[in-house]
Length: 155
Image (cartoon, rainbow, N blue to C red):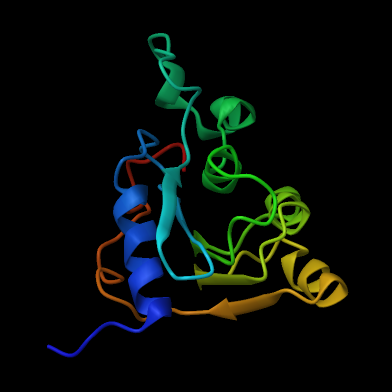
């Protein structure tokens, strides 16, 4: 096996982080590297650390979404502005997360799949941030989204 490229490496780290998410509908992960490509941290979407969701919380995606902390926001809590050069996210950052990543001085953002409701591309263009899709990386074939079935009433 040949050595992983930096985009493959950091995307695989983000994917592994996503597997920790307790969200049964959508698992999102993120990973950060410094200027020397050393790992600063990993994070995933979920509830506030240590918070236990009440019974029935996960039944409706729409009802619980407002309480979910995004992987990118959880990741930004692990570093100071300017400490991170590269961030990888399993999904393109939403508009708010892209703003936060730019505010933290991130210069390169890799992501695995598009998010059509995001203004991330326009924000990246304005701030000179590289926003690069990396759909193929180790573990990318492991699903992070619950498979829909006819019996599913919520996604």
